[in-house]
Image (tube, rainbow, N blue to C red; front, top):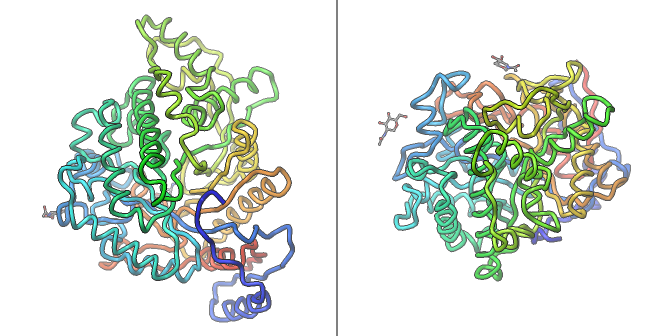
Length: 513
Ligand SMILES: *[C@@H]1O[C@H](CO)[C@@H](O)[C@H](O)[C@H]1NC(C)=O
Ligand SMILES: *[C@@H]1O[C@H](CO)[C@@H](O)[C@H](O)[C@H]1NC(C)=O
C-alpha cells in the first residue's frame, strides 16, 4: 500500500472475544445503547484498512504565547476581531493539548486506532515563519508527542499546514505573495530533518479551499474578503508550494520518508434538478470547488480545469481587467505540480445542490459568480450543529466515484469525516451519521472499486471550530472548557468508534432510549 506503513493485522482469533467485551461494555455503560457485531463480510473493511482520528494544532493546543511560539493569523484575528467569532472565544487555551497531549494519547490508545492525524504549528516551530530561528521548545513538544504515539504503537500522520500561518508572513501578504512558496519549502525541510525518522506519512496542506476561499476570499482569518481575486492568488501559491515540497521529498528525502500527499475537501455537488443546465452547472461547480486544487495535481494533463480557465478568463475580460484574475502556471510549474502526491487525502462531510445561475454576471469579481451556480441544501436533509453540514451519506459514495472517474482511481485516504452536535454524551445522531457514511464508503469500495485505504474521524475531541468558536462540537470525546484541566469524557460515539477501529467491521448498533 502506498501509504507506506504496516498496519496491525486484525486479530482473527478475537472474533468471539468482541461479543464478550461488547456485553461487558453494555453492562458497565448504562447509556441505553447496545452494540453487537456481525461478522458479515459485506460490513467489514479489508484487513489492511486503517482507522484513526484527527485534530489540528490551533484547534486543540492552546499555549498560544508559550515558550517562544510566534503569533499566528488566528491568534491575531481572534484577538482583534472577537466579533467575527460566533461565541467571541479564541484558541488561546482551547483543549490545552500543549500540556495535556499524554491524555490525548491515552484516549487514542483506548479507542484502539491505528493512526492519529495531527498538525504541526508553523509559528510554534518557526516563530517568524523563517527557518533562521528554530524554536527548540516547539521541536521538543512535537518530539515528545511523536515518542508518546510511537510507544503506544499509533502511526502519526502529520499535516504541515492546517491554517495557522505565522502572522509575520501574513504581514508580507501571506499566501498571496509568491515568495511564501520558498518559505514553505524551508519549513518543510526543518520538519523532514527533525521528524522525518518518526513520521512516514506527511500531508502538506489541509483544505486549501477553506483557507484560500474562506480566508482570503471571505471572513475567516486573515479575513481578506477578496473573493475572485486573493483566493485565486492564495491557491496558486499553495499549489506551487505543494509541488515544490513534493519535489524536495523526491529529490532528497526519499529514503527517509515513505509518502507525501495533500488533503483536499470535497462536498458532493448534486444538480438541483435533472435539467441539462443544472447538470452542467453542477459539474462546473465540482471543477471550481474541487478541481481547482485536484486537477493540477491528479489529472493526466495537470494545470487548472479547462472550464475554470475559460470562465475566469472570459469574465475577467468582460469586467475590463487587463489580465485574468486566475493566474497562470508556467509549463515547468504545470509539470512540477502534476503527479505531486502519493495519494489523495480527502475530507468529506456533506452535500449541496447546484442550480445554474441565470442572472447577469456582476462587475464585482467573485468566485461564486465565476463558478456560475447557486448553492443550496434540501430542507429535509437531517441537520447537525453546523449550518453547512447536513447528513447525506449517498453524497459520500458519489464523491468517491467522481474522484475515481476523474483521476483514474487514485489511492484515497479519508483524512476527515464527521458531524457536529451540541453538548452531550449520548450522541446517537453522531453514531447514525457514522453508520450511514461508513456504509456509503464501504459500498464505494466493494461495489464501485474505489481505492480507499483508510478512514479518519474528525475529531478526537471537541475543539476550537474557527469562526464558530466552541459552539460546534465534533468530538468523540467531549471537552469541558469550563474545567481548569479541560476534562475529556468519552461519548457514546467513542465506544462505537472503538469497536469499529478494533474489528474493522461496522458495528450493528441498536439505540434504545
Ligand atoms: C500570554 O497570553 C495571556 C492571555 O492569553 C496573557 O495573560 C499572558 O500575559 C501572555 N504571556 C506572555 C508571556 O506574553
Ligand atoms: C449549535 O449549538 C450552539 C450551542 O448550543 C447554538 O448556540 C447554535 O445556535 C447551534 N447552531 C446550529 C446551526 O444549530
